[in-house]
Length: 321
Image (cartoon, rainbow, N blue to C red; front, top):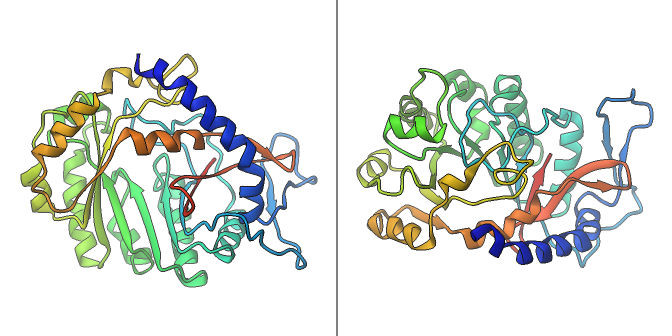
């Protein structure tokens, strides 16, 4: 019933995205995105450039905050995941740098790297180089990462910690059995052990620490107040489980998230239970649903596949590959 009630609004949002995608990308990626004609068939070779004579479209929204989901691959199998591993493609580093540079030129101030699991590709080296580039070369005020934490090593902090402002770790439960049911686990590795270890590294290397939690049928009755206060994140973002057709719901989806969905009332009850937690920042389905239209693979300049769409109105962009 929930899914059917969202069909018409989703169609409208999808039409809006399609109708505006050209001028949005034109304003951010400077209207030139093309497939390298010299690439071998079956390979992904990208190029992004701006002609010296081109000026930014003043009517285009300014991408002040960008969420870059540069990979879909993940070592976890969270049942509600809405950015699943439908492709293993990752934009080459030099091409990613060009895109990031253009975003900076068009007004980007904040960049957040996510996935999939961003530390999985090249064991975090690719991610580290992008973080360093954004902080040193682009001099962005805020560079952040969202990760499940399982692949993070202290040596990454030693090499790239100076360039990272915020690290958000996903944690949906402080009960290991619940994490197993959700799919936020890998073998016998303890997700909670990793969480506390990363918290100490963030303190040591002076990186702001955040926690993200997706509230669903398996953790809806849990009281996380004590653990959150102990970890003392700068922010605890709490999300309501959301269905995205083709990603975690529907015939073509790699996940079946229907069993994880909770009602708006249940979500509000969870928030009330944790109302004394000062760092709590709720994200309801109403906000997340608006972003659902961002999951689009569109052709830019007829050949280059990319997806760059507005998230929060006027000031946030999300890039999905």
